Length: 436
Image (cartoon, rainbow, N blue to C red; front, side, top):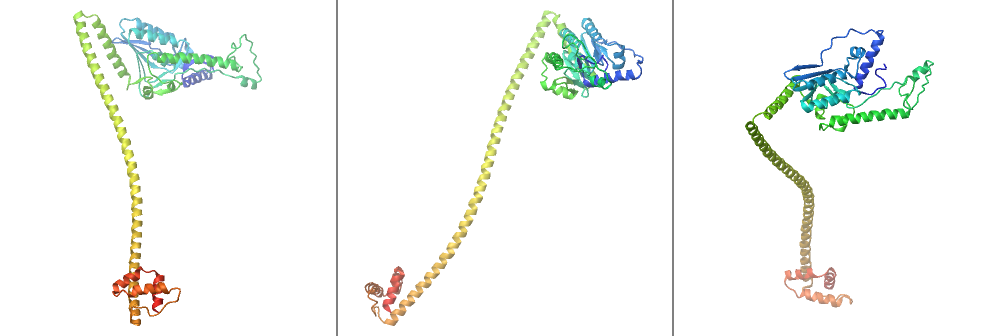
């Protein structure tokens, strides 16, 4: 890598740094012949009170003809001169930064940003890009009152990069050994043919971290709420940059100019009012107060509407939760009803079975009654009397005699049947045995 590019801190896109390195390599391959430089346009142009400062290419502090022709570089001192002129000229009432730059060196960039901030205190400054507005270019643009980019523009690259070439292995393969003598452990940083020590790496990282901290503070100083995750060195499209508050999105340069014209026209009107007679000022003040009151009333209405909306959202959430609870209860009740219906069907089947059994038992009882009556009639017919015909064995005689007597004393067949049913099978057997 050419000494112009290595061992120095850069606020630039890595892709641009590589492109510059390729340009240097191409120059060397052409034998050191430079193409004819093309005429450069002035950085500052003025139209209808708007001073446009055009910033194109890598921003270097003092680029030579080599950097200008091969890399398309622009000098930070030239940009500073254009900014100072725009700030001092009475015919320029607003400043428009038309940027197409991948960034540049750290040297000179904070000063350019400070110049933009100084002008912006006296005149509105807008920054715009339809190409690149990255790193050092974004640092400078961040001090403008407004930043705009087209959807396809590339914005951001908030970070610091430094390349240090370690060619010691390449030299060693050629039999070349480099010895460096220095006083101070950091003095030999980036010396050709050497490798960095850990202390040297820590120093480089410390320097880059300090620059990055200044960069971050600068882009946030005007109150832009850029999240930390958008300041990790990445580049965003215009559409993405708008989401991360790095820039507003406009369709083209004309729209950005139109917005600046509207703004500086409002500033001019305010300036005119400051020089107007007291009665006009009083009238304007009254109008402004009325507008403020209207704004306050609208704000209160909006706050009330917002509170009502929040309340409705809360009620909706509660109703939704209740609906979900009722749905769950409904599902549980449906499941319980299905279980109960199954149990009812089971009990109904059991009841039908029991009814069948009862019917069978009733039929069996009726048959038994018929047989008892038949047997009683047969006994009466065979003995011809209701008195006991024979005496049962001694052990059963008293009970059998008593039961037979009771049974024989009943003359009504239905009554005899009822009496017979009340007897146990043993008692019935004793009666039958006694009659036999």
